[in-house]
Image (cartoon, rainbow, N blue to C red):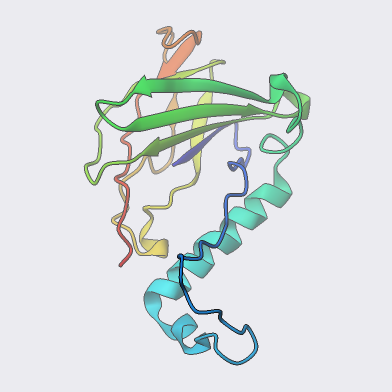
Length: 169
């Protein structure tokens, strides 16, 4: 789930990679790639998600403006191993920011409190659990207004419904 402040469209860093298993046969991109797989609904859903992530990355400064500066990144929640939740904040030019939260369990977390740096309205920029990508549509929908309750060294907080980590198989 990616959250934003005041209608901006943030994303996390690009994290697309290919893993090759040990002793795996070499695949020729020209002749051996199974292009027919792109016709499956699950694969189209992933293509849509990657397309939207790339669009958000292009249109938003927060995820990449300060890649090589400490001011560009801070943890919002890195201590919740019991619920398998991880959150961070990316900062960009012009006070743009992105709050990124991951729930690594198959269970949605209701009213999960997250610290945010500023008062305001936080909208959902991208939710990988959206039905558009084959998910169950758990999320915050239209967005949430922050509350003046400090949390995790942040002046304000929000309580979204965190979507589950989906198994798209």
